[in-house]
Length: 309
Image (cartoon, rainbow, N blue to C red; front, side):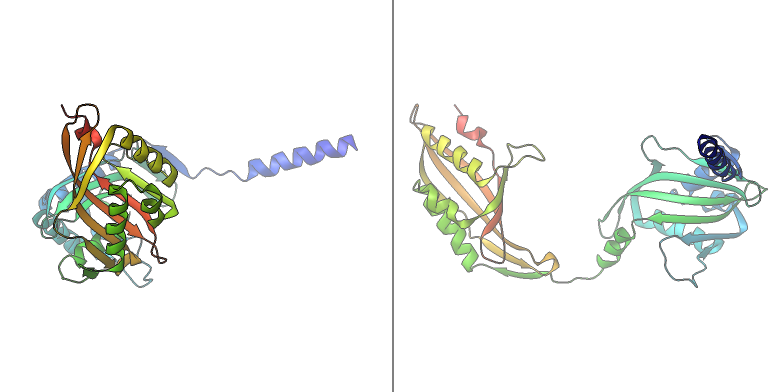
């Protein structure tokens, strides 16, 4: 039995090793990498003479995210026109290696040399202001003359969709200056002005979150924590009034089905320690769920003003 087990293990080892087959060599430094990176820098500068010199006559640029099986990509002339287009229609263009990533040159035994790149593309579209800020992965086939014959790109196509959308006006919902959800925000602020904490927080869902400018990026309060913070504030300050500035807006968005009340306030306090009156400008946004409860409050204010001398 022991001999059979050893034989099985040896056979398994032979099978595992037999699955390996070398098909070329990978380089972190290679003339093909130099050509690829030089071409990309020339492309974003609109230097079509240099770009053309790096490309083979049969060059094709292929969108790796395109699911059309009949697509043949862009030929050399079209690719050069793209370089001119981006140079004319985008500002602050740059393409750099992504973080600590670096290109690989793969010399295959049969299919020639391929270069893989992992880059970051940045810029601002000049007509729409859409920000280009995305990872870009590309595969290049470099021929024996060190010319680029193929380029296959993988990128975030939604950025380019946003650019195209920026050329046409469209609505995204309805703005109300009177609405039930506006009434709820006013009632909530009125209750808190009079120190009625229970009623004030009854307009919030149990899982509601609260943030303000004093908090860190990923920091937020729960309903219970916000209650505690509000009650603690009342120990040191008397609320004189919460006065609405202008009028609140209620926005019902088509995209994402968002329901948001924006409101602006002048919060007036009296500090109990010395009787000093303090005014604090406040902007609030409140997200509502389908049940009409507030799920999130973002406060554009800082309580540092309360400590003013």
